[in-house]
Structures are given as structure tokens and as C-alpha cells.
Image (tube, rainbow, N blue to C red; front, top):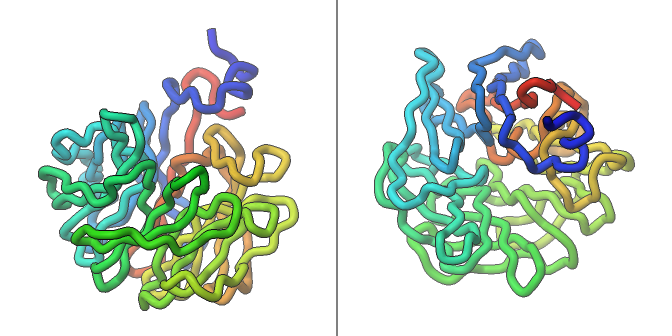
Length: 300
């Protein structure tokens, strides 16, 4: 029988994960439960009309209706190995997914209608992990490994040649456009620990935005009004700077978009899958995230 000691050394065994879909309200600091699932779900995106959340489950994308509480799997054809890196288009009509392809298991980025359909390949090279879609709908941003280095790339939404934006040694990940399209937020180990950074959309003028000495900071998500950024932080005693594993106690942090007033707003058992992609509501008041427990054990 698997016990706490087993999961402490096997954090990627998620077969017994249960998921709690939560919503944080920045106006009053409250946390509500939208739904609980007896299986693993990851990385909610909020729909553009505010009515639903989209997340991955068992390799497929799912639409969760916030009013009825009903979940509906989206037909993604051959793409049955979707991971937690997915983003809706600015107009809400399409969804870009990261799917581990059959030929080599490497993640590649595809685009399809948000209601379902045949995915269109966008990044022939893998692995590629999607994180951002420019506000004008023309460009997607993603983390990709090329030649042994993980860096940030962009590619036209209609397909074409990818552009490398970062070349600093070490992992750079989680690229996401600011609402005005002028900047890309991301996380990078270039300072030693994993921290939040911001650069111009062409990759120039990178600026460090968090300066934690005891935490590794991941996946900055800027609100639609451009005023706040939520991100996830691991304790340095729990993970190496480049790791974003599950089954860890983590903090969700908020800060102003200029890097000021950073504070922890929630501590939970989670990590990988909790908030990998932007999950802000359209009104910039709330964001969604996933908390986990292990069946029969709870938390570690």
C-alpha cells in the first residue's frame, strides 16, 4: 500500500490524486470551492464570457460550467495527451493546446476551435509548451527545448518560423503577454533561484520583478486590466530552482504589476497543475486554481 513516505519520494505518481477547483476573490480575500473531482485536473483557464473554466483531465480538455457545475469534454480528435499548458485566444473562439504526440511523446502546440474540432499543428518541433497568446491574436508564446536549452519562443498564430526570445543559460519558462501586448512576463533561473521577470515582447530589456531568497517563483499571470500579477512559489528547501513538481506545499502570491506590494494570499497543497496558465476572470477580480489531496492520505 502506498503511504506518505512513498509519495515523498515519488511525487509524480498522481494516480490517486483528487482535485479541488478553487476561486480566489481579490476584493475580499475569500476562497470558494467551485467543484471537487475524484481525479486529476489541471490548470484552469477562464472563458472570455466569464461563464466557464477550461482545464485538462485524462489527456483531454474539459469545459466546466460555473453556473450548472457540469463538466463537458471537448472533442480534440487525435489530441488525447493534452498537458497543462493551454490558452484561449483573445476573442475566446479558439483554444491552443500542448499535446504529447504519438511519434515521440514530445509536447507540441496545436490550435483548434474552443467548441472542439481537429487540432492544427503550430510547432513542428518539440518539446514545446504553450503559455501565452498576444492580445492582437497574431502570436503565441511558449517554452521550448532546443539543443538542450529551455528558452522562450514565439510563433505566428497562423504558423511559420519560430523566434527565440531568450538565450540566457538555464531554464526560462511561462511566457505570457501583458494586456497591451508590449511585454512578456516569464520566470527564469538566471538570477540563481527561479524568479519572475518581465521583458519587452521582442525579448529585449528583461527586468527582474521578484527577489525572493527563500522561494522559487513560477508562472506569473497578469490580470486582464494589467494591474495585478498572481504567481506560485515553492520553498527552496522543497525543490531545486528548475523544478515545478506536484505534491508540495506552495504559496499563491499577488503583487502589483510594477512589482510592489507582493504578498502571499493562499498556502495550499499543490504545485504542478495548480496554476500553470492564466486563470484570471475577465473582470480581473478573481482567479481560479487547483488544490490537491491524495486519496486515502490527504496531504503530505
